[in-house]
Image (cartoon, rainbow, N blue to C red; front, side, top):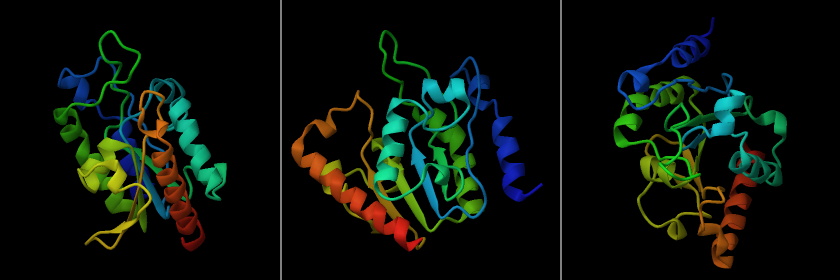
Length: 197
């Protein structure tokens, strides 16, 4: 087994959030192979992801995949050139009385962070795509999305970071024509990454 396969097996066996009383069922997801040049980080798996056992399969995930296709990637790049991950590995459930997914608590994020760090260390990607506010705030900046989307950032680790807004229908950020222009600029940057990596 490769180092990554061992790590992924350990992640799939993780039950920390059930033991901590945050979830009733753990079904951690992993998707990717060694040598991926782009590391995609979202918030958490969706209900569809949880049921299918694959990352970014729900409506928001399909829209995100569409953005990658628009930028010149191929569907087969997911899990090969693109390593798919999230701040937490399991579907966190819905907000009480709502159809919106619950944002994993800081305690849940902390429990899962060592897995994400280990994946990054093992993959050593050249670029990181941050999908949605939680990933952007965790790895890049707490600045408003309007100041970040459409740009790329190089951090001290030498990696390129590209923030993307969340594509969920629950988010109203993309309802603004100006913000749609920023998304278009971000997809131009994503295409540049596709050509360069």
